[in-house]
Amino acid sequence: MIKAVRGFKDVLPEESIYWQFLEEKTKNLLKAFGFRELRIPVLEKLELFDRGIGSTTDIVEKEMYTFKDKGGELVAMRPEATASIARAYIEHALHLKDPLGKYFFIGPMFRYERPQAGRLRQFNQINIEVFGAKSPSLDAEIIALLHYISCDIGIEDGVTLEINHIGCKKCRPLYREILMNYLNLSKENLCDDCKRRLERNPLRILDCKKQNCKNISLNAPKIIDYLCEECKTYFDAVVDYLGVYKVPHIINPMIVRGLDYYTGIVFELITTELGAQGAVAAGGRYDHLVEELGGPRVAGIGFAIGEERAVEMIKKRKKLDLPSPFFFFALLGEEAKRRCIPIATDLRKSGIYTELEHEEKSLKSQMRKANKLKAKYAVIVGEDELRRGIAIVRDMKEKKQFEVSLKLESFLSLCQGGAE
Ligand SMILES: [Zn+2]
Ligand SMILES: [Zn+2]
Image (cartoon, rainbow, N blue to C red; front, side, top):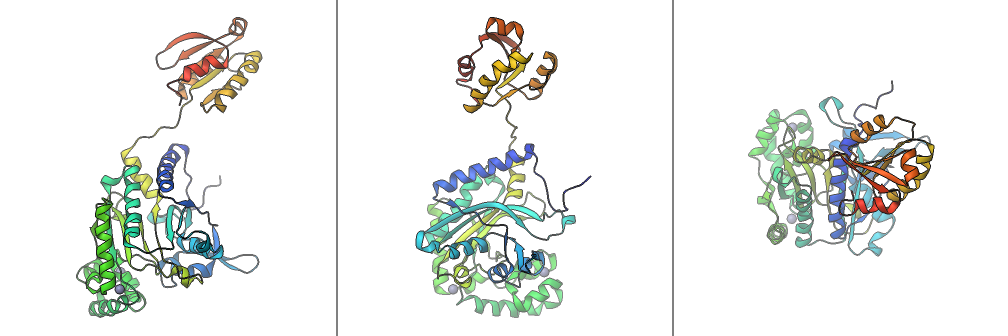
Protein backbone atom coordinates (compact mmCIF):
# COMPACT_ATOMS: atom_id res chain seq x y z
CA MET A 1 0.00 0.00 0.00
CA ILE A 2 1.27 3.47 -0.88
CA LYS A 3 1.02 5.96 1.95
CA ALA A 4 1.31 9.74 1.99
CA VAL A 5 4.81 11.18 2.27
CA ARG A 6 5.95 11.85 5.85
CA GLY A 7 5.02 15.31 7.04
CA PHE A 8 2.23 15.57 4.46
CA LYS A 9 -1.37 15.14 5.52
CA ASP A 10 -4.77 14.47 4.03
CA VAL A 11 -7.74 16.46 5.26
CA LEU A 12 -10.82 14.25 5.30
CA PRO A 13 -14.36 15.59 4.81
CA GLU A 14 -15.25 15.50 8.53
CA GLU A 15 -12.31 17.78 9.14
CA SER A 16 -12.40 19.90 6.00
CA ILE A 17 -15.73 21.38 7.08
CA TYR A 18 -13.76 23.19 9.82
CA TRP A 19 -11.32 24.47 7.21
CA GLN A 20 -14.23 25.71 5.10
CA PHE A 21 -15.69 27.44 8.14
CA LEU A 22 -12.37 29.17 8.88
CA GLU A 23 -11.79 30.23 5.29
CA GLU A 24 -15.33 31.37 4.57
CA LYS A 25 -15.59 33.45 7.74
CA THR A 26 -12.20 34.99 7.04
CA LYS A 27 -12.90 35.68 3.36
CA ASN A 28 -16.17 37.42 4.20
CA LEU A 29 -14.40 39.78 6.55
CA LEU A 30 -11.49 40.32 4.15
CA LYS A 31 -13.88 41.32 1.38
CA ALA A 32 -15.54 43.86 3.67
CA PHE A 33 -12.07 45.29 4.37
CA GLY A 34 -11.37 45.57 0.65
CA PHE A 35 -8.90 42.71 0.22
CA ARG A 36 -8.51 40.95 -3.12
CA GLU A 37 -7.20 37.50 -3.79
CA LEU A 38 -3.76 37.24 -5.37
CA ARG A 39 -2.76 33.66 -6.16
CA ILE A 40 0.92 32.88 -6.20
CA PRO A 41 2.70 29.80 -7.59
CA VAL A 42 4.08 27.01 -5.40
CA LEU A 43 7.54 27.25 -6.96
CA GLU A 44 9.82 30.29 -6.98
CA LYS A 45 13.46 30.94 -7.73
CA LEU A 46 15.51 30.13 -4.64
CA GLU A 47 17.06 33.58 -4.82
CA LEU A 48 13.73 35.22 -3.96
CA PHE A 49 13.70 33.72 -0.47
CA ASP A 50 17.41 34.20 0.03
CA ARG A 51 17.03 37.90 -0.58
CA GLY A 52 13.50 38.30 0.74
CA ILE A 53 13.46 36.34 3.99
CA GLY A 54 17.17 36.55 4.75
CA SER A 55 19.93 34.00 4.27
CA THR A 56 20.67 33.68 8.01
CA THR A 57 17.10 32.88 9.04
CA ASP A 58 16.18 29.34 10.13
CA ILE A 59 13.81 29.02 7.20
CA VAL A 60 16.40 29.71 4.53
CA GLU A 61 19.28 28.03 6.35
CA LYS A 62 17.66 24.71 7.18
CA GLU A 63 14.00 24.41 6.31
CA MET A 64 13.57 25.06 2.62
CA TYR A 65 12.44 22.60 -0.01
CA THR A 66 14.93 23.43 -2.69
CA PHE A 67 16.05 21.54 -5.74
CA LYS A 68 17.51 21.95 -9.20
CA ASP A 69 14.87 21.43 -11.86
CA LYS A 70 15.64 19.58 -15.08
CA GLY A 71 16.78 22.80 -16.74
CA GLY A 72 19.33 23.32 -13.95
CA GLU A 73 17.47 26.19 -12.30
CA LEU A 74 17.62 26.40 -8.50
CA VAL A 75 14.04 26.60 -7.27
CA ALA A 76 12.25 26.41 -3.94
CA MET A 77 8.75 25.50 -2.88
CA ARG A 78 7.44 28.60 -1.12
CA PRO A 79 8.13 28.45 2.63
CA GLU A 80 5.93 31.50 3.21
CA ALA A 81 3.90 33.87 1.06
CA THR A 82 5.00 37.45 1.70
CA ALA A 83 8.15 37.32 -0.44
CA SER A 84 6.17 35.74 -3.30
CA ILE A 85 3.37 38.27 -3.09
CA ALA A 86 5.93 41.09 -3.05
CA ARG A 87 7.58 39.51 -6.10
CA ALA A 88 4.21 39.43 -7.90
CA TYR A 89 3.52 43.01 -6.84
CA ILE A 90 6.77 44.14 -8.42
CA GLU A 91 6.57 41.92 -11.50
CA HIS A 92 3.12 43.22 -12.45
CA ALA A 93 3.85 46.82 -11.40
CA LEU A 94 0.80 46.73 -9.16
CA HIS A 95 1.85 49.95 -7.46
CA LEU A 96 0.71 51.73 -10.64
CA LYS A 97 -2.67 50.01 -10.57
CA ASP A 98 -3.48 49.85 -6.88
CA PRO A 99 -2.45 52.94 -4.90
CA LEU A 100 -3.17 50.86 -1.81
CA GLY A 101 -2.67 47.19 -2.68
CA LYS A 102 -4.63 44.94 -0.34
CA TYR A 103 -4.18 41.26 -1.10
CA PHE A 104 -4.89 37.94 0.47
CA PHE A 105 -3.81 34.43 -0.38
CA ILE A 106 -4.80 31.09 1.12
CA GLY A 107 -2.71 28.03 0.45
CA PRO A 108 -0.04 25.54 1.48
CA MET A 109 3.54 26.42 2.40
CA PHE A 110 6.44 23.96 2.52
CA ARG A 111 9.22 23.57 5.03
CA TYR A 112 11.53 20.68 5.63
CA GLU A 113 10.61 20.29 9.32
CA ARG A 114 11.06 17.29 11.59
CA PRO A 115 7.89 15.20 11.28
CA GLN A 116 8.76 13.24 14.44
CA ALA A 117 8.09 16.43 16.41
CA GLY A 118 4.61 16.53 14.90
CA ARG A 119 5.55 19.31 12.48
CA LEU A 120 4.05 19.23 9.02
CA ARG A 121 6.14 19.75 5.93
CA GLN A 122 3.14 21.04 4.07
CA PHE A 123 1.09 23.41 6.19
CA ASN A 124 -1.46 26.04 5.31
CA GLN A 125 -1.69 29.76 5.80
CA ILE A 126 -4.07 32.61 5.24
CA ASN A 127 -1.91 35.55 4.19
CA ILE A 128 -2.89 39.18 4.28
CA GLU A 129 -0.64 41.86 2.81
CA VAL A 130 -0.99 45.61 2.30
CA PHE A 131 1.39 47.57 0.09
CA GLY A 132 1.67 51.28 -0.49
CA ALA A 133 0.97 53.03 2.82
CA LYS A 134 2.41 53.59 6.24
CA SER A 135 0.30 55.10 8.95
CA PRO A 136 -0.41 54.22 12.59
CA SER A 137 -4.14 53.94 11.94
CA LEU A 138 -3.50 51.52 9.07
CA ASP A 139 -1.26 49.37 11.28
CA ALA A 140 -3.95 49.36 13.94
CA GLU A 141 -6.54 48.43 11.32
CA ILE A 142 -4.53 45.42 10.16
CA ILE A 143 -3.97 44.27 13.74
CA ALA A 144 -7.68 44.87 14.39
CA LEU A 145 -8.54 42.77 11.35
CA LEU A 146 -6.67 39.86 12.90
CA HIS A 147 -8.58 40.38 16.14
CA TYR A 148 -11.92 40.52 14.29
CA ILE A 149 -11.09 37.30 12.44
CA SER A 150 -10.37 35.58 15.75
CA CYS A 151 -13.80 36.77 16.96
CA ASP A 152 -15.61 35.63 13.82
CA ILE A 153 -14.14 32.15 14.03
CA GLY A 154 -14.89 32.10 17.74
CA ILE A 155 -11.42 31.64 19.25
CA GLU A 156 -10.93 35.08 20.78
CA ASP A 157 -11.29 33.70 24.31
CA GLY A 158 -8.21 31.49 23.79
CA VAL A 159 -5.76 34.00 22.37
CA THR A 160 -3.92 37.17 23.29
CA LEU A 161 -2.79 39.74 20.80
CA GLU A 162 0.75 40.83 21.56
CA ILE A 163 2.52 43.71 19.86
CA ASN A 164 5.98 45.20 19.78
CA HIS A 165 8.07 47.64 17.77
CA ILE A 166 11.46 46.42 16.60
CA GLY A 167 12.83 49.80 15.55
CA CYS A 168 13.99 51.21 12.25
CA LYS A 169 17.24 51.31 10.28
CA LYS A 170 18.29 54.21 12.48
CA CYS A 171 17.68 52.87 15.99
CA ARG A 172 17.90 49.11 15.55
CA PRO A 173 21.67 48.91 14.89
CA LEU A 174 22.25 50.75 18.15
CA TYR A 175 20.02 48.40 20.08
CA ARG A 176 21.61 45.44 18.33
CA GLU A 177 24.97 46.54 19.68
CA ILE A 178 23.66 46.93 23.23
CA LEU A 179 21.91 43.56 23.05
CA MET A 180 25.01 41.89 21.67
CA ASN A 181 27.11 43.24 24.55
CA TYR A 182 24.62 41.93 27.06
CA LEU A 183 24.33 38.50 25.44
CA ASN A 184 28.10 38.17 25.13
CA LEU A 185 28.31 38.13 28.93
CA SER A 186 26.23 34.93 29.00
CA LYS A 187 27.52 33.49 25.77
CA GLU A 188 28.52 30.16 27.36
CA ASN A 189 24.96 29.42 28.46
CA LEU A 190 23.33 30.01 25.09
CA CYS A 191 22.31 27.07 22.92
CA ASP A 192 24.42 26.25 19.86
CA ASP A 193 21.98 27.91 17.48
CA CYS A 194 22.03 31.09 19.53
CA LYS A 195 25.82 31.10 19.75
CA ARG A 196 25.79 31.30 15.97
CA ARG A 197 23.03 33.90 15.98
CA LEU A 198 25.00 36.12 18.33
CA GLU A 199 27.17 37.58 15.57
CA ARG A 200 24.74 37.50 12.71
CA ASN A 201 21.29 38.02 14.10
CA PRO A 202 21.25 38.56 17.88
CA LEU A 203 17.62 39.72 17.96
CA ARG A 204 16.58 36.21 17.01
CA ILE A 205 17.95 34.95 20.34
CA LEU A 206 15.03 36.67 22.07
CA ASP A 207 12.81 34.35 20.05
CA CYS A 208 14.60 31.11 21.07
CA LYS A 209 12.41 28.49 22.72
CA LYS A 210 15.22 26.83 24.73
CA GLN A 211 14.83 27.41 28.47
CA ASN A 212 18.42 28.59 29.04
CA CYS A 213 18.18 31.16 26.28
CA LYS A 214 14.76 32.24 27.52
CA ASN A 215 16.17 32.90 31.00
CA ILE A 216 18.99 34.99 29.56
CA SER A 217 16.59 36.90 27.29
CA LEU A 218 14.30 37.71 30.18
CA ASN A 219 16.67 40.31 31.61
CA ALA A 220 18.03 41.51 28.29
CA PRO A 221 17.71 45.19 27.37
CA LYS A 222 14.36 45.81 25.69
CA ILE A 223 14.18 47.38 22.23
CA ILE A 224 11.28 49.48 23.35
CA ASP A 225 13.63 51.45 25.63
CA TYR A 226 15.98 52.21 22.73
CA LEU A 227 13.56 53.32 20.03
CA CYS A 228 14.35 56.60 18.32
CA GLU A 229 11.90 59.46 18.79
CA GLU A 230 10.18 58.78 15.48
CA CYS A 231 9.66 55.07 16.20
CA LYS A 232 8.47 55.76 19.71
CA THR A 233 5.90 58.31 18.56
CA TYR A 234 4.72 55.92 15.86
CA PHE A 235 4.38 53.02 18.28
CA ASP A 236 2.42 55.13 20.77
CA ALA A 237 0.09 56.22 17.99
CA VAL A 238 -0.56 52.60 16.91
CA VAL A 239 -1.33 51.63 20.49
CA ASP A 240 -3.66 54.61 20.73
CA TYR A 241 -5.52 53.63 17.54
CA LEU A 242 -5.87 50.06 18.80
CA GLY A 243 -8.08 51.63 21.46
CA VAL A 244 -10.17 53.32 18.75
CA TYR A 245 -10.55 49.97 16.97
CA LYS A 246 -11.38 48.37 20.34
CA VAL A 247 -8.69 45.73 20.14
CA PRO A 248 -7.57 44.14 23.39
CA HIS A 249 -3.79 43.68 23.30
CA ILE A 250 -0.66 43.62 25.38
CA ILE A 251 2.79 44.99 24.63
CA ASN A 252 5.38 42.22 24.63
CA PRO A 253 8.98 43.45 24.13
CA MET A 254 10.12 39.87 23.44
CA ILE A 255 8.39 39.61 20.08
CA VAL A 256 11.01 39.99 17.34
CA ARG A 257 9.75 37.71 14.53
CA GLY A 258 12.04 35.29 12.74
CA LEU A 259 12.30 36.90 9.35
CA ASP A 260 14.69 39.61 8.27
CA TYR A 261 12.20 41.72 6.38
CA TYR A 262 10.31 42.89 9.45
CA THR A 263 10.80 46.40 10.68
CA GLY A 264 8.73 48.60 12.97
CA ILE A 265 5.46 47.17 14.27
CA VAL A 266 5.31 43.40 14.81
CA PHE A 267 2.53 41.36 16.38
CA GLU A 268 1.48 37.83 17.24
CA LEU A 269 -1.75 36.12 18.17
CA ILE A 270 -0.62 33.80 20.96
CA THR A 271 -2.31 30.79 22.52
CA THR A 272 -1.34 28.39 25.28
CA GLU A 273 -3.93 25.83 24.23
CA LEU A 274 -1.90 23.87 21.68
CA GLY A 275 0.82 22.34 23.81
CA ALA A 276 3.69 24.80 24.19
CA GLN A 277 2.82 28.45 23.90
CA GLY A 278 2.71 29.37 20.27
CA ALA A 279 1.48 31.80 17.68
CA VAL A 280 -1.73 31.11 15.75
CA ALA A 281 -0.98 34.14 13.61
CA ALA A 282 1.84 36.63 13.29
CA GLY A 283 2.92 39.57 11.21
CA GLY A 284 4.34 43.03 11.05
CA ARG A 285 5.67 45.84 8.88
CA TYR A 286 8.13 45.20 6.07
CA ASP A 287 8.80 48.63 4.63
CA HIS A 288 11.99 47.74 2.76
CA LEU A 289 11.06 44.35 1.31
CA VAL A 290 9.67 45.56 -2.01
CA GLU A 291 12.63 47.83 -2.60
CA GLU A 292 15.13 45.16 -1.58
CA LEU A 293 13.57 42.80 -4.11
CA GLY A 294 14.18 45.38 -6.83
CA GLY A 295 10.81 47.14 -6.75
CA PRO A 296 9.78 50.69 -5.97
CA ARG A 297 10.09 52.16 -2.49
CA VAL A 298 6.77 50.99 -1.12
CA ALA A 299 5.88 50.32 2.50
CA GLY A 300 4.13 47.11 3.52
CA ILE A 301 2.41 45.37 6.39
CA GLY A 302 0.77 41.99 6.74
CA PHE A 303 0.23 38.83 8.68
CA ALA A 304 -0.30 35.10 8.26
CA ILE A 305 -2.69 32.82 10.11
CA GLY A 306 -1.61 29.21 10.62
CA GLU A 307 -4.66 27.31 9.48
CA GLU A 308 -3.82 24.00 11.21
CA ARG A 309 -3.63 25.78 14.55
CA ALA A 310 -6.73 27.89 13.99
CA VAL A 311 -8.68 24.77 12.97
CA GLU A 312 -7.55 22.93 16.08
CA MET A 313 -8.82 25.77 18.24
CA ILE A 314 -12.14 25.95 16.39
CA LYS A 315 -12.62 22.21 16.88
CA LYS A 316 -12.23 22.60 20.62
CA ARG A 317 -15.11 25.05 20.66
CA LYS A 318 -17.49 24.08 17.92
CA LYS A 319 -19.09 20.95 16.57
CA LEU A 320 -19.67 21.04 12.82
CA ASP A 321 -21.45 18.26 10.96
CA LEU A 322 -21.23 17.24 7.35
CA PRO A 323 -24.32 18.39 5.46
CA SER A 324 -27.08 15.80 5.15
CA PRO A 325 -29.49 15.45 2.24
CA PHE A 326 -32.85 17.17 2.27
CA PHE A 327 -34.28 14.46 0.01
CA PHE A 328 -33.23 10.89 -0.52
CA PHE A 329 -35.05 9.30 -3.45
CA ALA A 330 -35.61 5.62 -2.72
CA LEU A 331 -36.54 4.22 -6.11
CA LEU A 332 -37.97 0.84 -7.06
CA GLY A 333 -37.61 -0.10 -10.70
CA GLU A 334 -36.34 1.46 -13.91
CA GLU A 335 -39.46 3.52 -14.60
CA ALA A 336 -39.38 5.21 -11.17
CA LYS A 337 -35.76 6.15 -11.77
CA ARG A 338 -36.55 7.72 -15.14
CA ARG A 339 -39.42 9.72 -13.69
CA CYS A 340 -37.50 10.94 -10.63
CA ILE A 341 -34.08 11.81 -12.10
CA PRO A 342 -35.41 15.06 -13.70
CA ILE A 343 -37.11 16.07 -10.43
CA ALA A 344 -34.02 15.32 -8.34
CA THR A 345 -31.87 17.21 -10.86
CA ASP A 346 -34.10 20.29 -10.70
CA LEU A 347 -33.96 20.19 -6.90
CA ARG A 348 -30.19 20.01 -7.04
CA LYS A 349 -30.04 22.89 -9.48
CA SER A 350 -32.06 24.93 -6.98
CA GLY A 351 -29.34 24.25 -4.45
CA ILE A 352 -31.17 21.59 -2.47
CA TYR A 353 -28.99 18.69 -1.41
CA THR A 354 -30.65 15.63 -2.93
CA GLU A 355 -29.49 12.02 -3.19
CA LEU A 356 -30.95 9.21 -5.23
CA GLU A 357 -30.30 5.52 -5.41
CA HIS A 358 -28.60 4.38 -8.61
CA GLU A 359 -28.38 0.68 -7.84
CA GLU A 360 -31.18 -1.88 -7.74
CA LYS A 361 -31.66 -2.21 -3.99
CA SER A 362 -34.51 -3.35 -1.79
CA LEU A 363 -36.63 -0.65 -0.18
CA LYS A 364 -35.31 -1.72 3.20
CA SER A 365 -31.68 -1.24 2.24
CA GLN A 366 -32.45 2.12 0.60
CA MET A 367 -34.18 3.33 3.76
CA ARG A 368 -31.17 2.23 5.79
CA LYS A 369 -29.00 4.34 3.53
CA ALA A 370 -31.33 7.36 3.84
CA ASN A 371 -31.09 6.94 7.60
CA LYS A 372 -27.32 6.68 7.57
CA LEU A 373 -27.03 9.85 5.49
CA LYS A 374 -29.41 11.56 7.96
CA ALA A 375 -31.75 12.60 5.15
CA LYS A 376 -34.64 14.80 6.21
CA TYR A 377 -37.10 13.19 3.83
CA ALA A 378 -37.04 9.84 2.06
CA VAL A 379 -39.04 9.95 -1.16
CA ILE A 380 -40.36 6.50 -2.05
CA VAL A 381 -41.48 5.81 -5.59
CA GLY A 382 -42.34 2.35 -6.98
CA GLU A 383 -44.73 0.96 -9.59
CA ASP A 384 -47.82 1.56 -7.52
CA GLU A 385 -46.91 5.20 -6.81
CA LEU A 386 -46.13 5.81 -10.49
CA ARG A 387 -49.56 4.52 -11.46
CA ARG A 388 -51.19 6.91 -9.01
CA GLY A 389 -48.87 9.83 -9.93
CA ILE A 390 -47.72 10.28 -6.35
CA ALA A 391 -44.68 9.79 -4.12
CA ILE A 392 -44.60 8.69 -0.51
CA VAL A 393 -42.58 11.14 1.55
CA ARG A 394 -41.27 9.92 4.84
CA ASP A 395 -40.10 12.38 7.46
CA MET A 396 -37.13 10.43 8.79
CA LYS A 397 -36.97 12.16 12.14
CA GLU A 398 -40.70 12.28 12.95
CA LYS A 399 -41.10 8.80 11.48
CA LYS A 400 -44.31 9.94 9.76
CA GLN A 401 -45.19 9.62 6.12
CA PHE A 402 -47.57 11.23 3.68
CA GLU A 403 -48.31 11.39 -0.03
CA VAL A 404 -47.55 14.20 -2.44
CA SER A 405 -48.14 14.41 -6.16
CA LEU A 406 -45.10 13.42 -8.16
CA LYS A 407 -44.02 16.84 -9.44
CA LEU A 408 -41.22 19.25 -8.69
CA GLU A 409 -43.55 21.78 -7.05
CA SER A 410 -44.54 19.34 -4.29
CA PHE A 411 -40.92 18.95 -3.26
CA LEU A 412 -40.08 22.61 -3.59
CA SER A 413 -42.93 23.49 -1.26
CA LEU A 414 -41.59 21.00 1.29
CA CYS A 415 -38.34 22.95 1.26
CA GLN A 416 -39.88 26.30 2.00
CA GLY A 417 -38.79 27.56 5.34
CA GLY A 418 -36.39 24.67 5.76
CA ALA A 419 -34.15 24.42 2.71
CA GLU A 420 -30.68 23.25 3.66
ZN1 LIG B 1 13.71 54.20 14.91
ZN1 LIG C 1 18.84 29.46 21.93
